Image 1 (cartoon, helix red, strand yellow):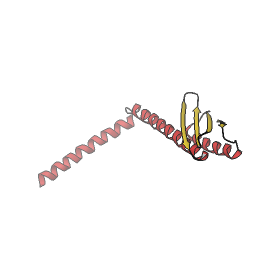
Image 2 (cartoon, rainbow, N blue to C red):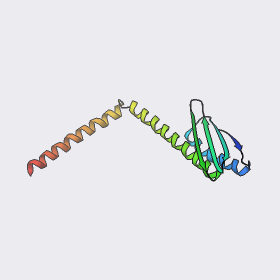
Image 3 (cartoon, rainbow, N blue to C red):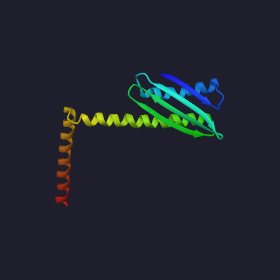
Image 4 (cartoon, rainbow, N blue to C red):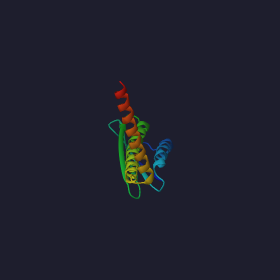
Length: 131
C-alpha cells in the first residue's frame, strides 16, 4: 500500500500524516494486492475539504468530504470510500452466488424446499378438511 498526501493552505504536521495513514489502513481490509491511496486536503473559506483517490490494478475509487475540522473531513471521506467498497464487494458476492445456482448442493436444497412446501400444503389442506 502506498499512501501519498498533499496539502494546500494547511500546515503539514506529523499528526495529520499519522491520521491519514491510520484511515488508509482501514481500506486495506478490502484488498489483498497492491493499491495506492492519494489524499488531497485543502482549506477554502474556512472549510476543510478532503479528496481521496484509491487506485489499483483494475479499479479506481474517489470520495470527497467537507467539514470545519480537518480530521472530521478525513474520517468522512474514509467512510464514503468504505461504503463504495462494501457495495462493490456485495455486488461481486451476489454475482458469484448467482453463477453457482446449478451446483449439485444448490439443486439438492431446491428439491428439499419443494418437498417441504408440498408437505406444508398437504398439512394445511388436512387442517381445513378437519375443521
